[in-house]
Length: 265
Image (cartoon, rainbow, N blue to C red; front, side, top):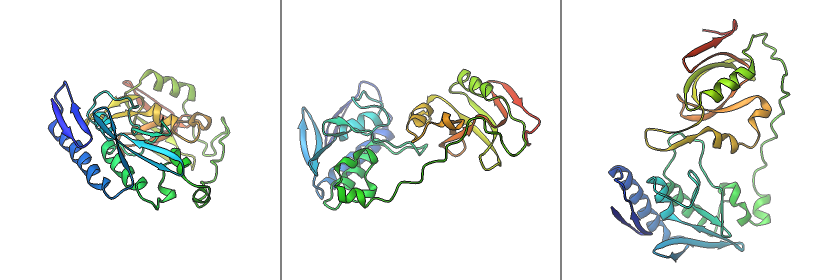
């Protein structure tokens, strides 16, 4: 089935949900609408149209049709969950990882068209991986980064006096039960107990969007394992979170429950 868009033809050999294709087409039409008030230049690439702009001698190219491919589960030359954008002819790592119901790639592309299509770009809004387009003056105007996270000393005892399950057992159980929903109670660094229903691994949600705790963990500015933490997906909040693997008082996973005397009902 073929679908005509302002940036080229969408050709699909499988049936696509009508609501999904309509949402993608609306996003592409919106991209076309806002394009007229920006500084982007349309570039024909075969039968498709990309958008290009040079900012401070750095060339950015956006591929709206590739974003549509990704939204519709079609084959794309870009990595899943990353926006189809080049910086100086190389893939730029621009992605959204914070929301469970992630926006469409095409909607995020529309936002970038607006953000980077102006003559007066807001430096603070530019994704970190695209900051080479900023001048030295713009970079100096950016707000200071947050203070470095205090390094946690592995094995440092909790001051709460609680009994915890062996961390090696928690890591073993999580590795053995990938993509399994489990419940866990652990002590936060402030000494309070946290109950969570979570999941670890790679899976597609009801909307067909991929969730990947391994990718989320790799995108963090620090290595969670250095702090006895592990990235999980909080099923109730619909967001990526971390659990303290060395301070677990109870875990129910794979049909088994393990707890210590410090577990709090």
